[in-house]
Structures are given as structure tokens and as C-alpha cells.
Length: 105
Picture (tube, one colour):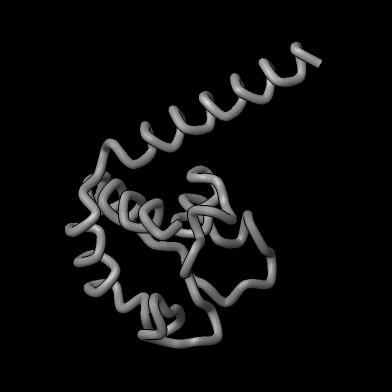
């Protein structure tokens, strides 16, 4: 029983560390600006603003940082029949957008 508790604690710490690393490279406010500049709200909504068919509220609690990034840069690898296009962003813009997405818990 003690071993299960320790393993659970270790897994939680590893996930928290990975989350921190994913958000550490970017700026949330700059990420919001990238979201706006790329017109993401044409297809997605956050806090009820934008296209309500594909809300991103809580996305960081549902998907890993790696999966969110894949959805942005290679959405067909996530869902073959998606209509979402692949975004070619600078490293800085992608880091900032990722920081913003990861802030949506």
C-alpha cells in the first residue's frame, strides 16, 4: 500500500514538473496575442468568446502539453479527418501560445 502511495506521489510530481517545463518557455499574455493574431477564435472559444463549437476552456486539464502542441503544428496526426490547419509559428510564438493554452486549466 505504501508503495502505491509513493508511486502516485512520484507520478504527480513528475507531471507537475513537466507542466512547469512546458509553460516555462513562454509568456501567457504574449500567447493570448498569438491566439488573437492567428484568429483562433474563428474556430475555438475561450470563456464563451469565439466559436462555441470547439471550446478550449480547460484544455490543459484534458490534454498533455505534447498533445496540445501536436494539435497546433500537426493536427492531422491527432485526428486524420480534422479540418484544422497546421500552424507554422516561430519558436517564440509557439512557446507563448503553448503557455497560454497550458494556463487554461
